[in-house]
Length: 225
Image (cartoon, rainbow, N blue to C red; front, side):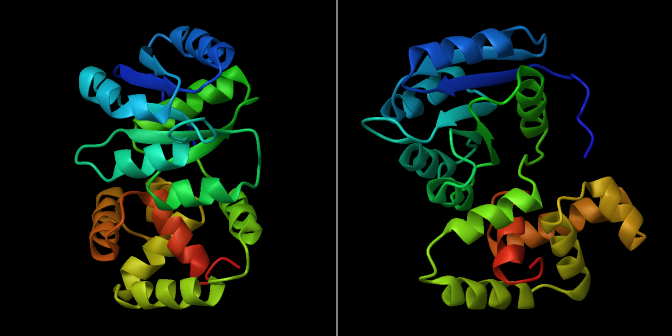
């Protein structure tokens, strides 16, 4: 998937209990002309107030913090109207909590040692409305979750997808494969506008917030095993 070129200003809120991590992220993001760090927090309890005050487009959220952790903060934030996008920060490739955060509506996750260029590109992608989670990483995360409830999740996912039209299901699977709208359009011989319309209908029918959640449903249903 190509990285969007710098465009309109993207407002970023950084949430991490480590002051050095916050300082490093702020320095990296502040060096990109189109990214503006509008606030910082050391605990998830501070997030609602800062979001209301600064109206960030993207929140970089540490998943492990004392007090209100990143998972709880993400669930609360994404359940609100007009919520900003959330990128989870973690030190682990396969963290079951990351998967829970993605199900709550996070747009993806980044390791804390992500190179600066990739960090900036990821924030830009999420700010443009694109997820930053590859299908390979999704499979790793799902495999990391305990076996309990897997059958239930698969049955639920298959039931959800059965409510889509054939074309909507094809688009949903393509989203799960990590394809962009342009790539889906080329592969299914339709216009990008039509793809966007199908994605919108899938989100509405499945009552989901973003493309990452579509991908998780597709994986749960076994379409990308």
